[in-house]
Image (cartoon, rainbow, N blue to C red; front, top):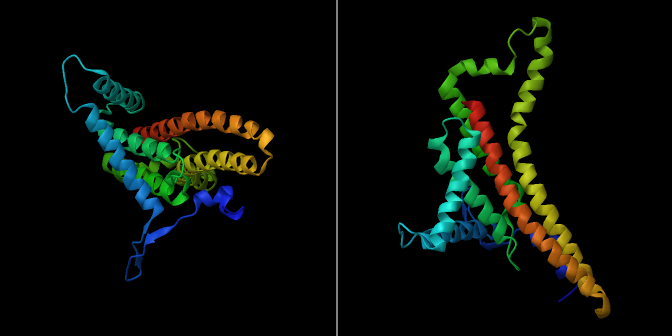
Length: 241
């Protein structure tokens, strides 16, 4: 193992396993795609195993799955008025982001949510969906939301670009927040582990102890970022309605 192979940022490199091009379209299978598929499969498997034998008096696997669903449902209804129909969407989104974050915590695994293209795609999907809901609910009257009622005409050229920019910045902030938090935590852990491998054997317990502490913090951050991503998605949907 060379020093170059242990560089902390090498964990974020996208590697193509099976090249596949259809015309100008690149459909190559990379570690990003494999990790995302794995996140979906593991999430579905865990949820199905938890409720494979449903009972009126649930055992602990079924109880955990039920409490998890209740948690996400409560989160959705607390942030979207009359949001019962959006529970499946937020539940799927929360579960997918959480599974992707946690898989990246496993040794040797790739963190898909540390790729801006992944978080950007998720954020853009939420933004476009909320925009579609806004149009279906209000039609072209939704454009009136960019100008507060009673604004003097001479302030319109100043306020309209500001309101449009803040509105269009929503998917950017949503994507960058998740991407930055996952990247920063993994980078810090990688740097500590890198210097731990280079340190003399008699002080390697220091970076080891720091790595264990940071690992626990990173698990908490992985859950927290899935929560924040879902809450903000709920806020955008509620604002559209």
